[in-house]
Image: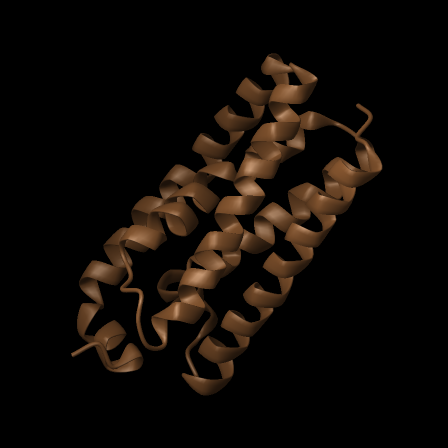
Amino acid sequence: MILSKTEKTIGIVLASLLLLLTLSGTWYFLSELNVTLLQWAMFNACSPSGLMYLLCFLLFLRQKKVIWLPVALLPMYYFGTMGMFTFTWSGANIFAQLSHITMTLNILWALYVLFKTEDYKSFAKGLLWSILFFAPYIVYVMYYCRTHAEELNRLLQMN
């Protein structure tokens, strides 16, 4: 799988932006809001999803195997792209929306690479692994946030 210099550069720039936004969001939750790791993984599910994508992206660059790209697409889509329609577009949520936009751009880049290579078998395998690994995580995040809604509202001052 050979990417042009421009295609590879775009992927690296998008991944770098995602890393910076993920680290910033993680710092905010862990330092400013002083939450536990479990609360961070549940209330800020975009960050673990972004970190998983970055790991898969690095594995893709190192091994040049397309199967790594779709592995993290499900949580990135669910928490990133769908997050653009969940959060408001004002105040402090603008920063969260920047993360969601960056996650979506990384998804689009990964899909571009997947369709360029026409390796649909790897794409299907990667998506299957994504579903097997991350569907339970998504379900648990939704359950946890619902059962801890008051705490989430207090932390984010969403009254």
